[in-house]
Length: 64
Image 1 (spheres, one colour):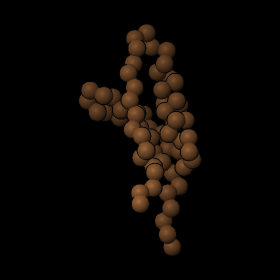
Image 2 (cartoon, one colour):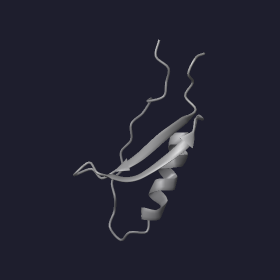
Image 3 (cartoon, helix red, strand yellow):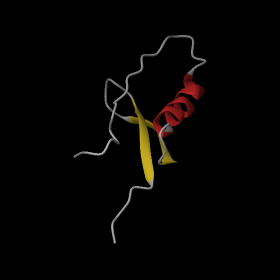
C-alpha cells in the first residue's frame, strides 16, 4: 500500500533566534499554506510596529 500525504504542518518562526512562534496543521489542498499563514499572522497584525514576513515556496510540489 502506498503512503500518501494527508496533512501539512506550517510554522511561524522568529527570524533572529529561529524560535517557533506558532504552528498550524492543515489538510492538504492547493491553498493550505496561504490560509495557514493568514491565520497565524492575523493575531499579530494590530501591533504598533511593523513586522517583516518571508516564506518558502514550492515545498509540496512532486519531484520527478
